[in-house]
Length: 153
Image (tube, rainbow, N blue to C red; front, side, top):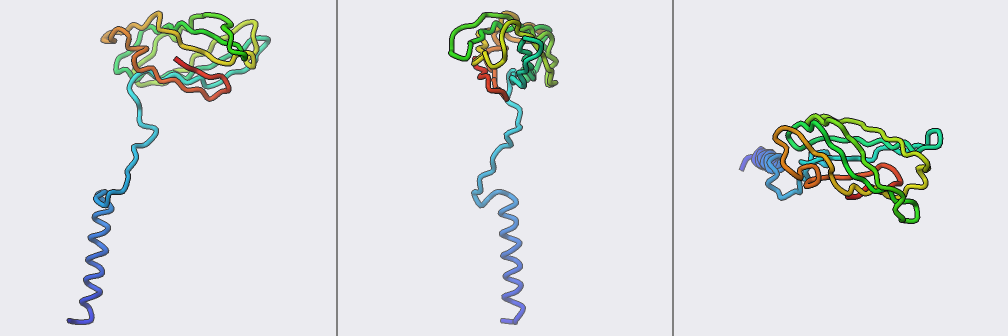
């Protein structure tokens, strides 16, 4: 065996291992990126700020239903910090183009943001758009909150 034999074999082994790693054949876990879009309607309670005696809440909404919504109105229940129902109200998210984020803001009169503990999306009063199936707005509703206020549905 020539002195170059072990070196050549080492190089071949190295390239073979790199090929396996690159193809994922070594059984290494390859997680899907967390930013992958889930189908459905994404609603994030993005901000809650006290403004002139009202609580202004901001939602980041992304329609991932695959069809444009010409109208989306949600019946919501606001709970105070102790868990009691504070009020029922409607949040009109208006039109929501497919695949494009939109920010919608609402003023909640007579309550500070600290006075709101949870917001429950009770149902979709309106969910309309060409090619949108009945119940689509609630079937794959994905809710998150970046605030101290819990958003659930």
